[in-house]
Image (cartoon, rainbow, N blue to C red; front, side):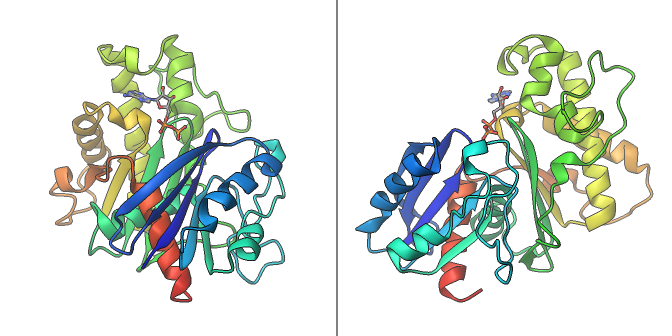
Length: 291
Ligand code: ADP
């Protein structure tokens, strides 16, 4: 079966064709400009590929509720040309196949659950820590939507007394994204995150914020595994430090098999940065199955 996948990002739209095993046969990147420019290019790409369904995993906020009049729309995104644009309808009309639609991070979470580090589990949280921070949540065997969809990149944290700069978020003075995204690290320490690799204090503070967020998620959602992806998490030295701080912050309150094996509990993304596009393949398959 041939399935189409679209991972929508602020700088590029990754369009791919694959099959239900998650194998990507081919993919292209199309720059994210205005919908008027970018949509026809994406539709042209998919038009003659013989796909049975399309899965879209995109930046948000978006309306993912099928019974809503705004279903398929990108909502109040800072990417202004896309505000209120319905990204689903033009594909349905032009391609005549079922189209599934979810957030980029829910897509990545689903990719890991279906093909990667969280196979076989039914409560999983995926965080991307990159230009922004976002979370995909898979709970009781389904992606979480709720009133909109989770926006766990904006959970509020306690600002560390060791933090020389604080949050860069225009909305919140202590949210996870404002304190721990790539641009926040770069503004605080005055250099690219990659160039800061050997500065211990950078990763000590970063792991402190990530650990706080992990504890909040552990206490609220009780995930069986947490997966951390995104550019910043390429700093592999963060993992041991996050795990140790989470254990310290939990302070023995929870005793579970999962938490006693931290190395398999808080883990890196496993699909070589293809988790988003592979998740979109699975979203396409689910759309075909009417899920
Ligand atoms: P996006 O979030 O835009 O989809 P990424 O997940 O690659 O893309 O995140 C980009 C951010 O991650 C930038 O702020 C960049 O500085 C940071 N980043 C990318 N690679 C690394 C790395 N190897 N180490 C630390 N930070 C990185």
